[in-house]
Length: 197
Image 1 (cartoon, one colour):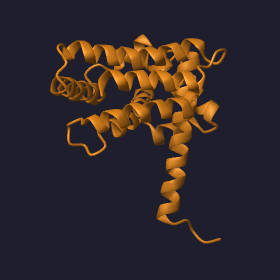
Image 2 (image 1 turned 90 degrees about the vertical axis):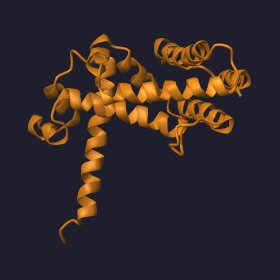
Image 3 (image 1 turned 30 degrees about the vertical axis):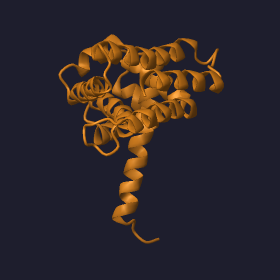
Image 4 (image 1 turned 180 degrees about the vertical axis):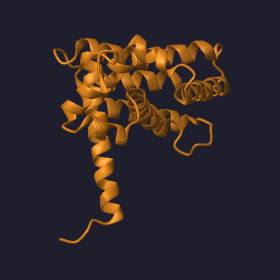
């Protein structure tokens, strides 16, 4: 058997890192972030505690990686060309893609929202680069609503955020007993686009 290539080793590492993040997301959401320990995460992942630290130097670093992954996915949908300006077309595409992602991977987003709503998680993320990304997101939205001529861009940012985040919270509280039908989510998506395009 020939030795593994550098690319193969990197893929194995990336796959294991992703596995750890998936297990952690599930545990943080179901058991609570504050309650989970590295030992619990290692046992559930099937690796040693020492090896866990090879991938993430702390539980906090693991949490940040999970939050950043979800946030990066949203930001990549929001400003795909990274120019800091949201056009009408980009706004419509963003809303459509956000809802497509929510429909296609409901369990991930239910778990994700469950984790980020926890008080200890919020406290940990204060003053981290993640918060600056959210602030940048809100600033771009503010400028979009200003250019579109809305009387109170702050109100529109708040309204849009509440509509999307509120849906996420509803999904958390009703999952898995009640799932929103795709047709209903499509109508909600269409209503948001009509309000703001």
